[in-house]
Amino acid sequence: MPANLGYVTAEARIFGCYGMSPTVYAITLARPNLRLRMVEVGEGEPVVFLHGFGHCVAHWAPLVSQLAGVRSLMLDAPGHGVADAVDFNDVDLRAWYKEMLIGCLDELGIDQARVIGHSQGAMQALWLALDAPDRVRSVVAIGTPAVAFGARLDAMRFLARPAVGPLLFWLPLPLLAYRNILAGTMGADAVRAHPDLVRATYLATHRAGYPMTVSSYLREMFRGADAEPRRYALSDAELRGLTQSALVLWGKDDTHFQPIEEAIAQTLLLPHSRFELVSGGHEPWLDDLDACASLIAAVHAGYAG
Image: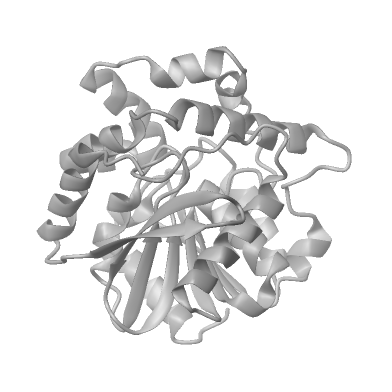
């Protein structure tokens, strides 16, 4: 597994700022054939954290520092941080993530876990809760869950083009330009408040294999979104069939990817759900940590709205 020592060092520094010294270990899977990296802090009930594409495990540090009685298990997404790159061309994303995440739980000896996902990670968390309900105790979906609630994300389509997408992801950018791009997925205030996290994210994503991984993932996601019937977007029937407690957590300024009203309507289809609007952008815990941690703790305590 490639070292990406610059990112590993930056990540450790961020966790240290919140008084944490994570345990880090590799997970090797046979199906899919993949090497991943898990970052663990705390003790208690297992909670798996899935970050969004273009972000990294370090983004979870503020949030997990506020969650008591939790064994936080934060996974590098493929092609990010130190995880293997993946070519997602012609891969069924939903089936692939089910196999991968169940494989991780099996390797960790965990029968059932709570899952918290952000952005693309939120969509993957919802998929797993539907496709392996016996392995998921509850779901927290933070921010627009990719296309799961029907968002079109058309502004990202050029990044899915076979030649153009990887090239654009690979182009070196001045820090100011990168900060401006990241503001769209972190939130402008969060970018200004967390310069060390911006640098860590840059190091996590500017590595071999990242451009191909993300561009091919987006290409397949858009193929599914355009198909008839649509894949990856969750139907009303699927949403009504989610059996676990679910919290959908949304920043008031997170309107770039999907209207808040649409997200509320989709959440209302979930039988045991709660929609909460908090201050901030696409990563609201970076703007309003106390509110987000309190709401998540309520789900873990067994509250279902």
